[in-house]
Length: 322
Image (tube, one colour):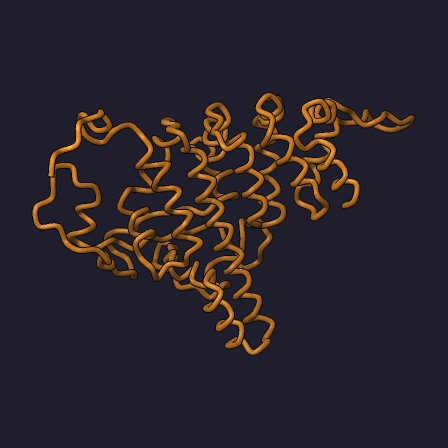
């Protein structure tokens, strides 16, 4: 099966004729069996298995814009999101969702808006809770304290200085929570925070720093040595690392939704991922590098590469003499 997928990937790569033939092909109908489905339906049905289906699907849609428009629809997005519910928060499943958002490195606005409206808006909150983690900058009554910025204070800030409030008062803790259960996989995205050995506040929020610390390989290896091969402790560590890696891919997915000034997507996400929130994770070197890199991508897509922030910003001007 894996060899067959490897042959198919090689056959369709950079070959428009083969890509189109495969995308439109249907399995041969056999006597006394239900009507055969399309080739692509079979591929999508197997993307959660380590057989090669994800590589084939991403090869088809990442290099052929016409096929992307033909194949990526709400039905496919629901199927892909459903795999997360069935198989848990696996980073590779989030990567497959992300592959639908661009072709040859360029964003596809129609698909971006479809992904946002299908998976992220308030109208689909239940699907979101079963597929993704919530993010918030927790203020007010919380067990987690604000941290000081690792940046110099600004004595005379200009008007509209982004992040000035956080710079002066400290950044409230960036936290996450998810639909968890001690008896996972029963009706939950993953194991709950207590089962994973994570501290929560009264509303179930977990500090992002605590969840993601084991993405750092040195901290991860140190934790494994501390577990001393005790199965329950080792499982907790590996599950925390899996969930953290999935969250990193979720942040990349959000960034791709906003890429190339997709303003409807930006409008959905900028309230959750404020400029101060993104900059704080990026600037604080106690967060793991993988997470900081993902937030750097998000910061650029959501707050930097967008309409000018100030009047006349972006207009050509002559350089000033020294």
